[in-house]
Image (cartoon, rainbow, N blue to C red; front, side, top):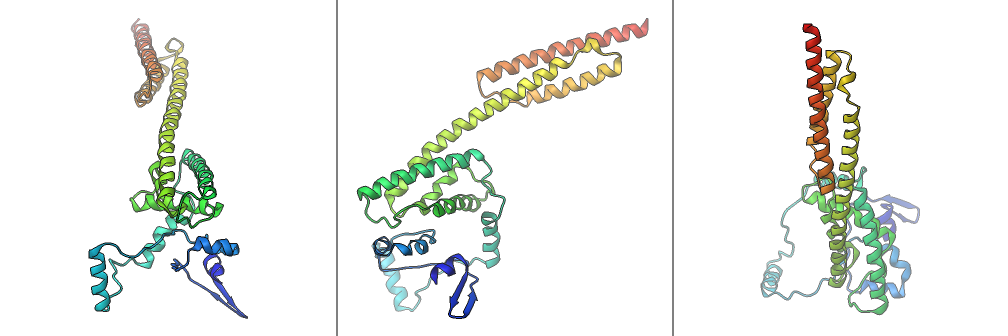
Length: 289
């Protein structure tokens, strides 16, 4: 029944079928879910649908205990910091749940998949060796991997962005584990992934700049002022040259190779400009004669 409510948003009781307009489910238990799953592995499908999991211990801070006692004595056991309208929740949810994805970089997708696979492998070693106490999830399922990508989207939205950046990957740790050891493992993986992303993005930019400049050089080479039949054709060449000059100026070189190619392009532009002026002078001289 719980699985159907969480997954299909419905409940069947005998002949009675009910749809459930469920948005969020909270669950608490005094039993360690991990130990329960060892005896009842068939319950894994239910537990795995709870996105965030955490141990909640007794209060240890004196001020918090004082507040708890006072609220208990005054009958004020519920303390709400504020309210969110259902419409706002629905609007924000659509940004995450509906297509298109706000993870717009294929490179981020590939690096995220690489990191998740590495994390799952390392975590299996921890579980096998029983080196971490408090582990709840016996495994990181494919379902949880998919849901974790939505957490990156949520983190971006809560920071006022509609596009996922590499640093949003840190937020996945709250879904991928329940202990500090698991969180640290994921943080270390993400830190390395962000460095790799930066290097690969720079390489992509370098390549894109080289391709762009190479294409502009070919267009510059095609401009031949001496082949212009008249002043109008020469003027068209001049306009094309100015456009190419602006495109070259818009490219900020990322390395010495691109800088050298940019200088070569500017030198080419200067030569073509001189050739156009000389050809224009010839046309004017022919007209005067």
